[in-house]
Image (cartoon, rainbow over all chains, first blue to last red; front, side):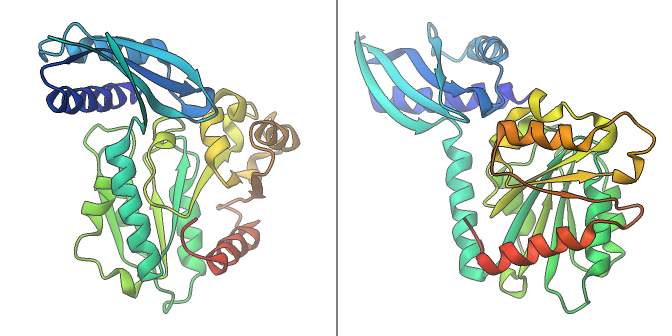
Length: 82
Length: 220
C-alpha cells in the first residue's frame, strides 16, 4: 500500500547520489527487503517504474535482494561513467 | 561499471526525523506509544477507556491519525486531555514529519505520556518510526486469529499485542490461545493483554503495562 512512498524514497536518494557523483550516473540500485518489512517486491517494482518515468534518471534498474527480518535498506549503487 | 556499497535505510529521511523526535521525547521526559491496528480494531475505544481511567492531573496527550475527519479527536477530547487530529488526506500511515508538525506549539515538557493513534492499517505504519518508545498492535476478536501470520511485520515489531473485543468471544469462532500462539510464532517475546473496552475488562493489565514500561524509561 505504501510502496509508492518507498519507491519515491529510493528515487530521492538516487537523485541526490547522482548529483553528488557527476558526471557518473546511477544505472542500478540494489535494496534489501526482509520478509517482516511489509513490502511487496512486485508492487514496489511497479511503483518504481511508474515514478521513474520522466525523472531524467532513466535507464535505472531496481534490484531487490532478500534481507533479514524487517530490513529495508540500500545495498549498493552501480554507476556508469558518462 | 562501478559498484559502490551503500549501507543506509531506504526511509532515511523518516529515520532522521524519527531520531530527532526520539531525542526530543527523551530530553523532555515524554513516554510515547504508537498504537497500530486495522480500521475498527478498537484503537480509539481503548484510548477512551484509558483516558477515562486517568486522573485529571495526569500529564497525558493524544495525537490521532486518520485519512479524513476529526471524529476521533472529538471523541477523545471529551476526557479533558489535550488531543490533536492528524488528517493525512489519503496517506495510509503517519510519518515522523507529520508527528513533528502536529506537535508544534505543544509544550512537551508539560507531558509525561503521549499516545499516537496511527491510521487504521496493519501494513504501512509498520515501516514508519515515529520516535516512539514502543509500537503496540491491536488485534480484535472479529478479525480472526490468523492475522499475526498474514501481517507478520507489525507483530514482529510491536512490543505488546492488545487483544481487543474479548466480550465477543462467545459469539464468534475465535480461539484466543491460537491467536496468541500465532503472534508468538512471529515474535516469541511479544507481550499480550486481553481487553474489552465495552465491558471494561482487562484494562488493569493494559494500564499496568503502560506504567511499568514508562517507569523503565522513555525511549528505547
